[in-house]
Image 1 (cartoon, one colour):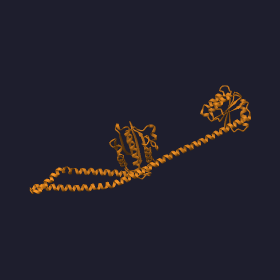
Image 2: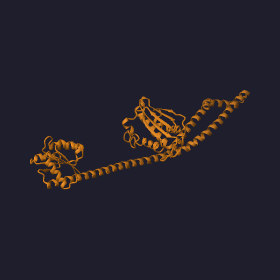
Image 3: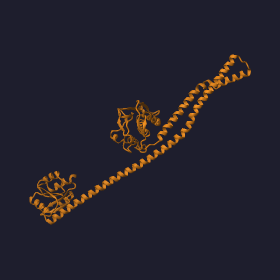
Length: 431
């Protein structure tokens, strides 16, 4: 406990100091002969209680009191006025300014010690209350953070369950589609072979008719039958049909193959992974699959340019890295469509490698990322989209997968003159 006694009378200073010592008040005592000296001492050291004479030359006690109570630095300092004045209006002014008590002069030992002890108790109570308040505030903050974490976790679990449900649904649909696609694909192979056989027979018929004409066979019935066949061939444009059949079959077969590829990719994507299933994978192949899945986001709307290098295989979880690239590319497509589509929306996907990493860069010419939110975009539940349009989990999940589950790097920066660049780096050696 530090007590400052301020009085222009050295006698009063000594009397007050002696009373504190004689009554065993546990404190450090500092003396000041003027208001100016008191302010100087308060600026240099911590003081708990100020015993302040009201009437002093220079700065009066009232003026010193105003200075003390006008600063937050001294907000916990108790000020007890020392006065021989009987003017209650002065005391009233002092209490209004923030004085906690007063002591009459000449100083009476019993009154003096009683008021000092009361002030000390007040300080202890105040400190105890502040400590309790800080503890309650700290606990309340922790509870609020725990509650927020609980809500976020609950939301995440809900989203996770939805992803699992979507994955199961996608896997079921893919399985159901795969069977008829298999039939159709197999039948096309048989159909193509059968058509070739039919074309061979038709060619043989044509050869036979040509030979008959060359031999001059004049049998009326045969001639009529041949003429009828020729007329029928003309009416159905048989030559054109036979020429077009190969193209139709090939195009149909390509369509079935593409549908089968979509189903294959869908089945791969439907295998939701919450823990890494690490295998050697071709990152270029993963990107191609992701572009197939997200094609509805950009086809006919955005130019997608691929600059793929011949990169080595990398150890990674195919499903998880697919999720990362889907989240990043979908964001790029959406922001380009919203803001820069009329200017020629473009997303460029580049792959390369250095001595340590296989690298994928997704570059768009959208609006870019505002500098003030650059360091927040990977935070869970942070989103710049309207309520109901985004969960704020996409980039957070991507960051967690790349950095925490693959020991890689996920970096974002703004592009010049506009747009953003997301760089995914996956290490060759996965530990």
